[in-house]
Length: 432
Image (cartoon, rainbow, N blue to C red; front, side, top):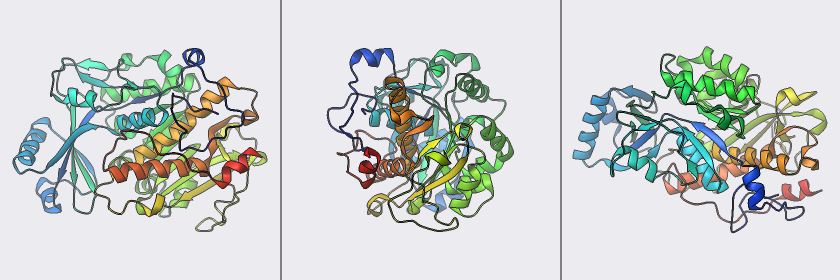
């Protein structure tokens, strides 16, 4: 099976030579594979500060707060004057995710949002485009008069990130700018809860319209939770939205804990599966969890060591591929956990983008399944309506590996793909 995109070498993600599909240019044109993301387009300004600096500004450590544009300008000038600005980059959770997806897949994605109507060399919009993969199609961005959104990322010595956000035009995406035909052909629609923070903002209505289109055309909706304070603020609204419209939920343990009321990661994942079909959870230095559903008849037992924590033998069926709960005659909840790759980088300067990059790996696997189902519908891989191409264990391994690269490079965006793939016990297991 060949993943979407044109690659000169084998991808890290495990595939087998047996039965590889010839994926020529004609097929690629006939069956484009892509994801669509909607974001509040932001330029990240990264600054190194002490905790006392955050206290002076009244910004809670580890949180994200909104500031008026004048206040952002004042803080920016102060940071520049004191030599604290480490860099200015294209940002935004979904912007990072679709960029990394296109780097991993070497294939197309689409980003929807607003951008400055008139772009000049050196301005914020110029920086955003310059730092985004050419594989990310920006042709559907909605032009507006005004400045780009800006996110000042304050990084304290312990690597924790705190954000001061200047809106600019980032919330001005109107619902009529959402192209239904584009979403109808996507393998996934990717959103962040930040879009839904202000019910009166145009971008909130645009996001809800996009979700409506995705549901109409059977496109999986992927929602990244944002921050713990946002989940606390909009908890009941988010729970109802996820239950009715979201297939895949992504967030860190603090966010999932706030959403579910659970203080244990596995129990938070278990309860989140009552709302969504598949849950990706990052847990700082403790690695990644992936929780999903599979029909009992299609469940596959692990050949790795079985572990018990708050859920006994929680990883027993981690070699199973995830399914939509509605596609399961007898749904079973399945879980897997992965410690940080190689124990994590020896030094982590900041954790910006680790969760976004893990989600991009999951999207790559979803897109592979979408492509393979179209290209080879009679394959045994599709004897049921699976959501992922690989097992949740293997997807978690891939997501963990991509997160490592982001942490190692101290950048929320990948600039190139991963090294050669690694063989695994599970690859031969699936070849049986």
